[in-house]
Every structure is written in structure tokens, then in C-alpha cells.
Image (tube, rainbow, N blue to C red; front, side, top):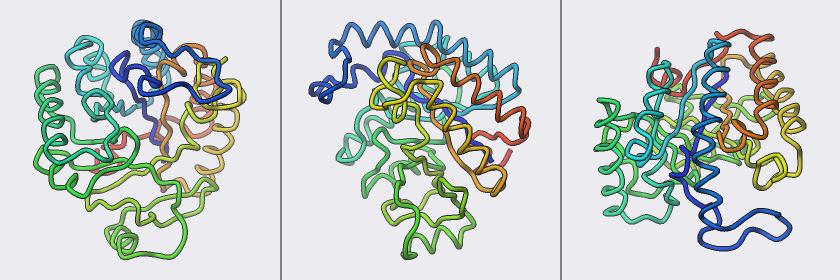
Length: 287
């Protein structure tokens, strides 16, 4: 089962290098104005391209959007909701979630809940923490604010079963590795909520190079998406009942690397049809 997601809503996430310089060797601007303009372009152009493609293919998507997007881009957020896609949460302004104290977490969740409710008339029930990790108090705060599932970063999905891994297995939540084999969640996913993990290997930022709009990768958009396509086809042929999540960022895959994204989704649709796709909420909570 393919869970196609998007993340980072326009300029809300801000400058990825605001708290330091770009890693050595990356030819990327570090000024705020550049990233604000790119964020706005991703909304005005990239979002529309991706929405049109998803509509053509009949694919439903989960957009992990920052709560502040509901204030900065209310109309554009409604584009996704009206098209039948799931809106889930991704922090308030893309704050690194791990390390926040409970008071700050609670405050940011309140801000997001209020903003989303004002635009969508509901509070999204999914949450992907920026940075992929949560805090010891997070689960209780999530439950207090109506969050029913999370998506955490899990690079180590194999290995000896821990008490947490066993608990997930007993709950019926299953996972898959990058080779399509069934895996158990690593104990780093310390949450009692249903968790649909994501891997940095299945994110456009990780493989696509700056020349193609990416951040940290070494491949062109077309090269990266050819690898993604091979990986996801293998997964679906071997373990179609297990979820595998892909994360696209519109400032990358809606702009310079959109041709690669189009080839990726079109190829998966041609091979498996729209029925192979679900939103993360549908997979966890049911249709």
C-alpha cells in the first residue's frame, strides 16, 4: 500500500539554513528572501501542478502542513481539502519537535488546532513532527489535542524485538523495509499512538541535488525518481498489504523536479492503479 504525502506548506517552513550555514559543498542560497520567494512559488505553481496530477490519476494524498499555513495560505490549504486530500499536522512553523518542553509543545499544538479549525472546520488528526522525533510528554499532549496517529522517522526498522516493537506487532500495525520485507519498528519510535514511519530514503530532499531543486542529494530529479519508482514497484509486488510512505516537497517536486515526480506517480499508477494508494489517515483509521 502506497502512502503518498507532501510536506512543508510554502514559506511557512522558512529558511532551512536560518540557524547556520549550508553544509559544505552545497551551492545553495542562505538568505531568508530567497527561501520566502521559493516557498511562495511552490504554492502558486508547485501545488497546482501536483494537485492536477493527483486529480488526473485519481490518487489521494496526505499533506503534512504546518499550522501557520492556515493563517498564511488559507485559500490554498482549502484547495487540498476540497480536492479530497487529507490535511495532517507538521508543527506550527516547522519547529524541530524533539527537545521542546511540554509547555511549548502544548502551546504550539493549541495554535495549530485553532488555525486549522478556523479554515477547515476541523482539527487534523495526524501529526508528523518536524525532525521526525517526539518527546516523552508528546503522546499525552497529542491525545489531548485530538491527534490520533503519528508519522515518525525510523531508519532502524530491523533488529531484535523490543517491548515497544512487540506491542506494535500485537496491535496489528505492520511495517516494511526498503527491500519490501516485513520489519518491526525500532524502539526509537517511543509512542503508544499508531505510527506510520517514514524513511529518509523515501524523501525527495534526501536524494535530489540542489541543481534539481533538492537540498542534500547527489542525483538529478529524474535519476532520483527512477530509483524511487524501482523501489516502490518492488515493494508493491512483494508486500502490497504493507504500507510504504513517500514524502514530496512542493518546492522541489512541484517545481524543478516535477517531471520526475510525474513519471514516478504515473508509473506506479500504470502498474498498480489508484487503488494501491491511500492517505495515512485512511490506512490507520479506516476509510
